[in-house]
Amino acid sequence: MHRAFTAIESLTEKEKKLDDVLVLLTEAQIATQQQFQETDRRFHETDRRIEALAQKLTESHLQLDERIKNLVSTIGEFLRNRP
Image (tube, rainbow, N blue to C red; front, side, top):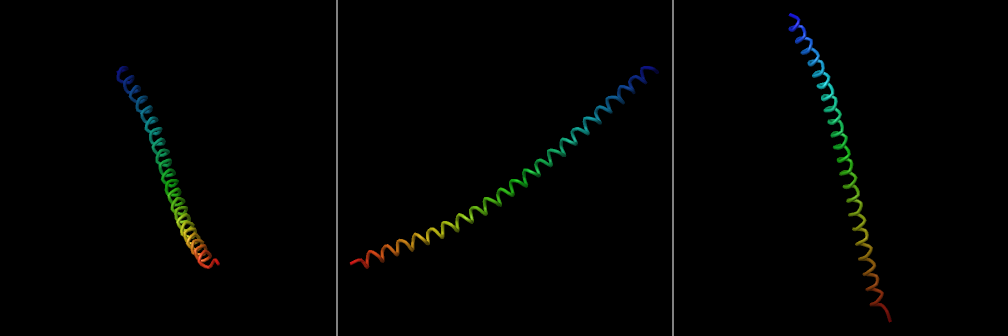
């Protein structure tokens, strides 16, 4: 009978340790999931910033192209009207 109680106590202790490990694993999984969500949020924010910057650069290039076009036109006119 003593061996049975010892075995039951041993199993109970191992079950407690297993429960503790499962709690740690669950907490680690939750923390990892939260980190993945934060990383995903940061990637989306970075993508949004890159798109805004690309749009700004596109607009800036279009304005620069227009300014160059006007400058070349003005220089051409100046050269044609020179005495």
